[in-house]
Length: 352
Ligand code: NAD
Image 1: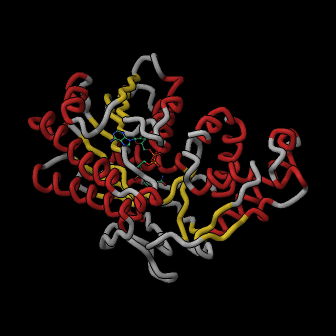
Image 2: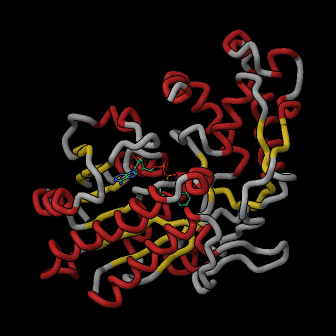
Image 3: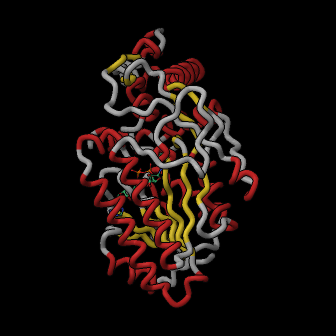
């Protein structure tokens, strides 16, 4: 694989994928297509701009003719499709953008790829990045989601991703499009927009603001460090069977309340070890000798909130040798350290 088109490469997972690929696969030429919505940030990729083998294109996946041109001019042999509207809360207040980008946008990409690659489909690969949320919700003792679990999306976000997964599958079965799909659990790590649970709570701790927990915080999520997601994505790009879907997860289920409590403990430990943080973040509880947990505040639950997600990643483990390596604790510590070291990155976003 030589020339890769990465949609949504300026977002959280997409930009981490670019960093990972630059360091592990420097021979791969990367073309990033990103509409730079509120969630996209060109600064995430700033150090590659102007370097050989990297091109950033500010544009929309809905622009089929732009995508066709990019595929032809860059001789693209694989697409990794991250671009999406990705925040469940926003999908509840404004679902239309999710249908436009996630459903129509994915279809536009498929159409463009099919047209350009038509006569040599076997030389190409379209990888679609999706979520475990398409499977719906689990009871406390239900077995984890497998690739055979029926789809039962409960939020407009999950429904839009489910629809895009179905389109990708249909393009394979109907037109022979060389596709793979991955359904991944909750990611965390650097460059995550501070509306998602972990960066939101981290920055709220630093400024002494409440940590909003939906309902009683008993909802269970499986957490995966974004670098472990990228390892899985590259295994699928290298060795995944076309037409297949692969679940990617961390075997790491946590109640939301416990996740936020762990974050609080780790931030307090950072303040204890680095006393310069007290002068930088005077409103943080740890700067006043208090526990960050005192900021935890229970708020009205999200409508249709799924109670538990759990991923059975046995297929990608057995078939492709996938194994996540980051423990939740060490991954969270390095993520906290990244945010503390890169204050200028998130200060801009706090004002968005
Ligand atoms: P994100 O919201 O951080 O980034 C999305 C990126 O897509 C942004 O850079 C945005 O500008 C871009 N974009 C949005 N609409 C576009 C359009 N019409 N054309 C071109 N670019 C557009 O999202 P993320 O958290 O990095 O998620 C990336 C993908 O991974 C999504 O498809 C999401 O469904 C999936 N996923 C995310 C998680 C998670 O925990 N974040 C877990 C599983 C799967």
